[in-house]
Every structure is written in structure tokens, then in C-alpha cells.
Length: 518
View 1 (cartoon, rainbow, N blue to C red):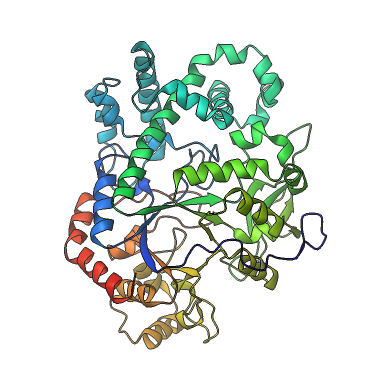
View 2 (view 1 turned 135 degrees about the vertical axis):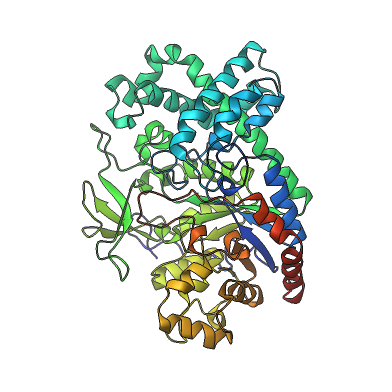
């Protein structure tokens, strides 16, 4: 196993570093933007409470979410303006009305937006002015302690909050342009703080701090409500951060950037494979892992600390990037010209285990895995992932077929990147469909529920079911199509969807929980 220096790392621990997934359980995957309501997007309102009630009735012990960070261009929760901040779109504005910070009539334009799809463009135009208006009234009211003291929140979160709020205020000030296109006095954090912009934008900076204060105040209430019901929250942590983010702007020394232009020297992606002749060009800047190692991964330790404060379990996206990552010289038209470069390897996880000895982490280890990646996962003890939609159509050696799974794993019919199980089956090859029917001994008319039962019955200790499969939706319920630039992350369920599964369906899921010891 190689470290970022290319040398063989120290021998692995005699025992795995993390060994937390010791009992069987089930959960449901749903991003909060998909919750119903009349504010144009799912929010932390009563609909979140009702969804938790359903999970409890169904015997689920986990609610898995996509990243909750503030989204930008493309609306992807995997390309956020900060690895620490929350998404203000998820704020329940009606609660601010109840606090006297907004007029009820001001929410009427949001209520006119579609209820089944999120219109992010309209949301951007409508919600931000309301958040800023709420901040103005909050200031005039003397900054009351709605979610604890505002000053206390600013002090406790100062490690990331100040730079994030300054970044967002500067971004607004510079017309939304990416930070490397800002004037010279703004591109460098130290220069920006010394300039007159800090004083000029003081009110805007506090407004962005206020949105985070409200976000975390409401989110913490959701987390407490989940805990009262015995439900843990599984958060999602992308390995890479967005280029146009407060993280890179405030810490350029931690990334492979040109010191003059601040543009990436290389970006992340994956190489060409069976699915894509050009590979995938993600565009995220790459870490200077040697620099991170000098302070024992301090930035990463703070990132995980913030994540564990928000969630009970953290899924790390693209786990294989810690073993080796596909480095694509910038600029590039596709991912063909990249090369595999050693990542930080086991020393990274040893540092995290020393800081967070009881950490509960899931390794997203999907895709083509090398023996080295598998060895790293096994040495860490982290549970990997298995996807049923990827199990069929080949031979009995497919690693995702239930008979090849190991207990220390998390099984899904599909993830946020897959079609619904019904949608997948409708477009799968006849060889895949035939394999499903023969392997599961089913007719294929209810493949979504066939996959749910298979996941519950598997040896994987944790089974996570996309809510769309519980609703028996086809491709109309798909949340994201990788490689498609528009139309993603928009799906929402309607209140009647939840009403339709609250009785018998929830009871059946609870029955499966008992039958299979979850």
C-alpha cells in the first residue's frame, strides 16, 4: 500500500480501525429537498416530522440523505459552496413568519411554484430576498435568541463561518462570478480581509451568517426529533469539494492550484470505462495530500468533526480516491489524459480513528476496484456498498449478487444516481431481466418490492431503500442522471404519496424488519 509520497505505508493495524456495523438494521434514502410542501422545495417543516413518523412506523432505524451543503450552478448537492455550511433553501420560512421576521403574504409566490419538481431558478429569485428581509427584521428586533444565541453560534462556528459568509458576500458583490475571476484584492483571503470590502460588506456577511444560524437551528430540531424516534441520520460527504467554494478560496495552499491564476493544475474524475469512452471529468481541484499530512490532516479532521455534529453516520463518497485518484491535467476536454496517483492511504484513516475512535463511516466503494482499494477498505474495517441493480446480467461471480456479499456491507436496490428499480427493470436488457427472474424466483411484475425483500433478506447488516422504490415509482421518480447537465435533483413526492404508504406498506416493512432481524 502506497502513501502520497509513493512509499510503502506502515503495516496495517492488527485489527480494523473501525468496526461499528455490528447489528442488522434498515433505513430509507430520501433527500430533504424531495419533501412535500408549499415553499417550492422540501424544507425542515412538519413534512420532515411526518416522514420520520413513517420511518418509525416502518421499523426503519436510519434516514440517509445526500449532502446538505449550499448548492450553486447545476444544483448538485455534490458541488457545494462549502463543505461545512448548510443549504438555506431547506429553511422553513413559515417558521420565520411565526417569529415575526416575514409577512405570511410574502410566501405566496413560493406557494405558486410546482409541487412535484423543484424550480431552482425561480427559487433563487424568490427565496434569497426573503431570507435577507428576515435578517433585516432580525437585526431591528435586537437579534433575539431564536435558536440559541446568535453571537454564541458565530463564535462556536467561527472556524468556517466567517470565511464562508465573506465568500458568499463577495460572490454576490462580484455578480456571482467564480472567485478566481474576482479582482486581485478579493482573490486572496488575507488581502480581502485587509481591504475595505470587509467593512463595506459587513451587513451582507452577517446576513449569510444568519441564514446558517437558522439552518442549523432548524436542522438540529430535525435531528433531535429523529433521535426521539430511535432513527439515526446518515449524511453524505463527497471526497472532493467544488472549485468555486469557500473551502478552496480560504485554503488554496491545500489544493493543486496555480499560485498566480488560482486555476487548478489538475482536476478530479475517473478514466474511460465500459460506460463512457471519455471517462468522467468532474472538474474538482485535487488535494495536495503531502501538505495535509504535515498537520495530520487538520482540515479533514475539522470537516469530519462538523459532519459528525450533523449526522450519526457519514458516508464518504468515492472512497477509492484515498487509495489512488485519477489526476487529469487542467484544462482538459475529457478524462482520457489522466493518470492514477497514490492517495493518502491508511495513514489518513489512522489519523481519523485517533481523533474519532467511535466514528461510524460508510465507504462508497462502487465502480472498478483494485485489490489495493479492497485491502484499504478491509484494513479500515469500513462497510462498503452493494447495488442490486448492478448485480444481474453476468455470471455468478458478480460481487453484488446476494450470495457474494459479506455482513460488513450496506445493500441498496439503487442509489440517488440510479433509476428507480421499476425504471431500471423497464429499460434493462432481456438478459438482465431474465437473470432477475431466475435468481429471485419472481415474475418481474413487482421488481421494486422484489429488490426490497432481497435487500432485507441479504447478509448485509444494513439495508437502505430509496423512498421512490417504496412508492413503486418508475423513471418519473428518478432523482439524478449522472452526465446529464440539467433536470437533476428536482423530484419531490406529494403528501398523498406518504399517506398511501403510511398504513399497510409501513406495516409490511415492519414485518420484513422482524422476519429478517433488522
